[in-house]
Length: 589
Figure (tube, rainbow, N blue to C red):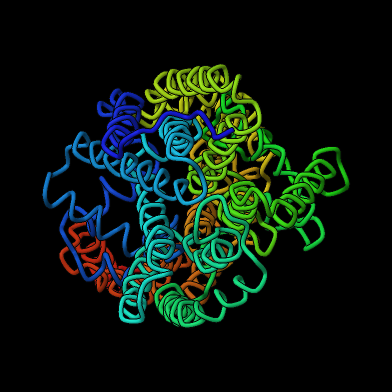
């Protein structure tokens, strides 16, 4: 019996998916700037001043000390274009995010339609449009990196499938189009680099005609015919990696989280396995959401734990499904898609920039849409009398997902709402303790703030920024011993960053120890290079030691960074006056 799924026109599917996407994120249009939005968009002169050259050739995220740590030229250029077009109105940015998500949802339907009946593909697209794990990517402006990467990535997949049986001329023309889409995808987000693996998967498991089983001989012919595609994409990937090294100084560039930095290869692999149950939970039962999954929401695995074993079993099951599901290409595609797209964020090959982020599951969640649509098609084929029940259950799930997303969207209204929700939902998070510490400082409860910093550092002991924050707070309270301990630890953790050297030199000056202040500031200059604040501290250390000529020279070096600095000019005048009066004082004596 043929599957009794209703025939839906392309226009109806388009309206359905667009309507669900709009209904899911309409209340996110009122959100403002939250967390990374502030640094990457609102307060970024590259974006606000329209520095197009820097947008394409500069770092996307410059980190605590302005060291380049990410390169995403596509995303930064698109954000810059939005600011120049709409100004600093967050509404416009959120509207673009909604439109991008709607576009990606339509592309998901087009991809699913290659292996599923139209109605089943529409069901999978509807689920994708409403999925709550997408809230961080869609309701937060910087999530556009995920949306853009997914749009170009899926566009390349659809183009590949629709042109693989075209004539020789059309197949030649698709090469530059695929190369452009690939370059834009990896320029939007690093995870786009996995596209060749997914195209290979599509060539292996997706038949030329829906419902057929790919014959081994035909698969071999396909691989040979597609060889120019892989050579072209390989050249794009090689060029991208070379440019990335030129911009960032290394391939990785990105800071490794403190909780992962100290892990050996074995512990990192165990940690990667331990995350798979959480990936699966967030993709299948996405109700307990969090803006942060660092300690102690999730903890690195240093030994074999239950979640490590579960992760290994999940990967084994996905691998078996991808290899065995020849009669159901959608199942093989879903399993393979999930493994390939999760790989860059999994820490399996190398440490990623965060333990886990819901935004990073945006592209992998296409696998859930495939599984949902495929499940509906399977019921329609094997249990046609139950297809209405299955469709109703699917509609209910989409409705529940939509409501959960709508409720979650205001969490990303601003930074305060994000941190308030985190503290409420996951009070054990190190980031929640850090946020409470900042709030207590503003409220004047310094003792409470120091306690929160101590707890946050217990959970994440090697966090450079937090060591500097807590050390600076202890310094301001003139608790010099704990301040020195924390700032010295920060120097050990990141010896090539200047902030801890600055704070430690200030601490020694406060303690009246000019020699140690001098040595610390010079050590910072030796590791970081020339720096205004460190030269100013060298100058003050010379003052503490009574060497005014050297203090003048060091202050002049600081002034060279900003010749219009009134504070540096004033201090230089004071030092010159003191230097000129010193001989007179000596002769008077």
